[in-house]
Length: 183
Image 1 (cartoon, helix red, strand yellow):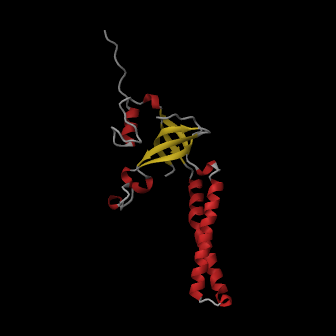
Image 2 (spheres, rainbow, N blue to C red):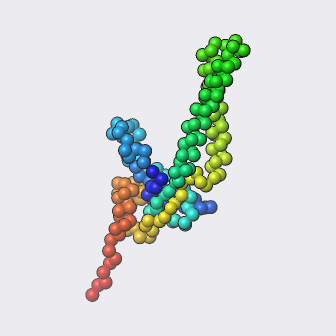
Image 3 (cartoon, rainbow, N blue to C red):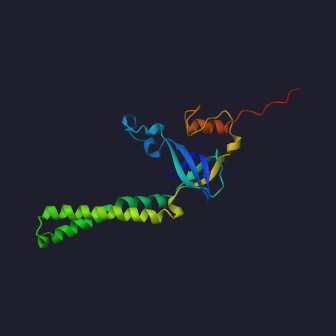
């Protein structure tokens, strides 16, 4: 899902912030979540995001990543190694008689070499692509300002007090009424 709500825990220079979110999307509908050793249902994830709208620490925000970026990233990470695996295996099958290797040995050896090359190519590309802001999620909008949150609400990262980001956001959306003047 391209949108996720979270809380800004720190603002870094040059338009970056760290946002903590609750309950990973990948785990939300997982049929194996009850038996999963990672306990992802209660996981809190801190993510580095673009902060182009000047959200401040404590603000509840909506984080967005475009579907195009997600698909492009998935294609790079999953398809490039497979393509090089197939190219390597094809090269191995062609060169096996010339090299005096068995057919399956050459396919396996060249396939693993192609897979390794694809992996290192992705590592090199990731350094270059990390410079592009389009691959990073960004803060889409501020849902609640941190100054609106009641002082009794807990810290979302340490988990003190309230149990989840949803409860923390509920506290942010329902601050206590202002004190009434004494007659």
